[in-house]
Image 1 (spheres, rainbow, N blue to C red):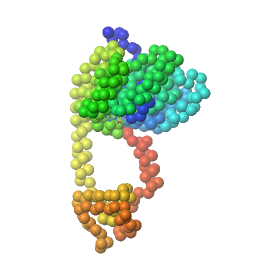
Image 2 (cartoon, rainbow, N blue to C red; image 1 turned 30 degrees about the vertical axis):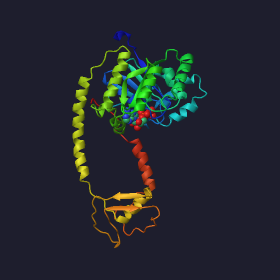
Image 3 (tube, rainbow, N blue to C red; image 1 turned 90 degrees about the vertical axis):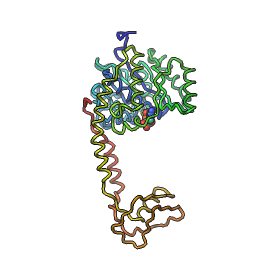
Image 4 (cartoon, rainbow, N blue to C red; image 1 turned 180 degrees about the horizontal axis):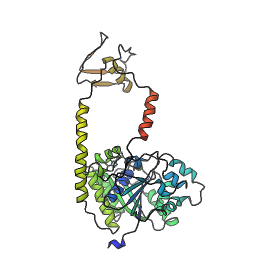
Length: 384
Ligand SMILES: Nc1ncnc2c1ncn2[C@@H]1O[C@H](COP(=O)(O)OP(=O)(O)O)[C@@H](O)[C@H]1O
Ligand SMILES: [Mg+2]
């Protein structure tokens, strides 16, 4: 094996028609780790939910997305966005993409739209990762047609093997009709829990059926992997020392070695990141202190009752500290613990409102929309 055998450009579809098995987490973090190893990587979000896009801190509602590329409105390079890692670029997706399945239905070579668009990708890219949607529809077929291989994340649970047959069937059909070179890159066990007996049973069965395809790397269940997207970052830029991060560094190493690249030495990247993340953590700790000193909200006991009972019929509210500044109702009842059942609930006339006017529903809705689209700052190729 030598580096000269390594493919000039490797395109990998991360696919499984089941939702929630770790496709997006694996696409984002594998792409980020390949980029961290200095291989220029393009992550293409092919899921209308746009989770890979937002998970990398990119606005889903930018004007050019993969939808615009597929319908031929823009060229591929016009849709490429930067990420926080200099070697990682992203083509975003949003709900528009749902329309692509319908709009392309009568198009000539509709299964090859993505493959054709990718021909215009510039030379210096080494990897393209497609984050597939949870279906085996036209978008997934386009990804399979444009790819060299499939990476199949599999959650070690009771129904894990169910549906795998259907996925492999689609793989065979694409291989026969559209892309004879398509290979299986590997099956990746995700959310792996060594304490769970079922995990071992699924793992054993996978090794029996697909001895060559089950990857050595297993991704454990790790909270840092699920937290990182809400900060718009891959886990390498969020918690370099987490088990989840190490699993994806291992996965990138395994994929690189399988493709005749040298095994990367992560030491320098890890120590630079560790330093950067320590620095970033400092202001956050200071913020936490000021949050602890945030002003207290004044509410009356009746308000607690009204607010809580609207949410859950049977409610138990624990009050750590009660400070009464101005309660006008004489029979306001305050106790260490308030417990109400459904039957006891009666319309309550709030005697005195001591908190701000409740926010109007329309205002909440408006804020929600705005928040969604400005969730993160746009990455600007920070050299972190
Ligand atoms: N190894 C893991 N440990 C903990 N949470 C995970 C892990 N992998 C994925 N998740 C979480 O599980 C959910 C589904 O994962 P996701 O990658 O979005 O799956 P898919 O793309 O297949 O629907 C997400 O909330 C994600 O953060
Ligand atoms: Mg997904």
